Image (cartoon, rainbow, N blue to C red):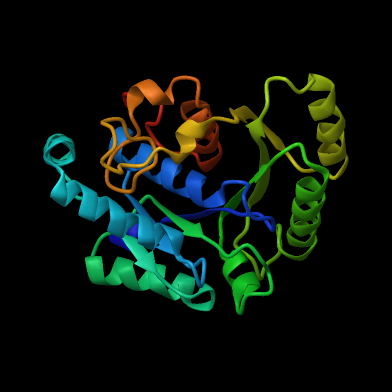
Length: 263
């Protein structure tokens, strides 16, 4: 490792589909790499769909065929003086080897490697891969089925891996996603108490339920929110919760110089 540097291995992980783990992986990676200046890599081991690999392909096709997006990408990468972060395709059981192999081949150690993990522990080798994460962040919604599934999953990780010699895992954190402003705060307080009773920390940031999280560079507009090649549009970041969520995560990860970098 260059200068003894070791990348942080991080995952947004749940055992319930549709709560945003892939979206948060892309948004956090792009926000940190393109707007905050950190070096990021992504390992897509969410077999068989490999959604982020597919997104990178769509992004590349759109940027290469659309003059406005091409201009945006050129200005962004000229300003940054670095390339897009790599999106590496892997099976769940080979995810760590894929990340390590990239570091060796590239001759460069990223600050953070995000892993897009499968939505089930039944995938081959997934528990061994999870044991090599430094931190896991779990998005949850105020839905009984989603919450119970996620808490059951995190309870297993807490008992089997957290603080164990055979595991690299240092922390498990939850945060509220798809928050409907019409729902009463009492609902979140009730569920929050269940989480607290388990001894699991809940982040302060609550992510609103908004369609902007589906806004890709699809050629139908000039604003982009979710992209592997372009930074999220600064106007759309306002009110999204992403800057606040990423700041909390950066504090937990102890990312050097985070507050000094421009939004």
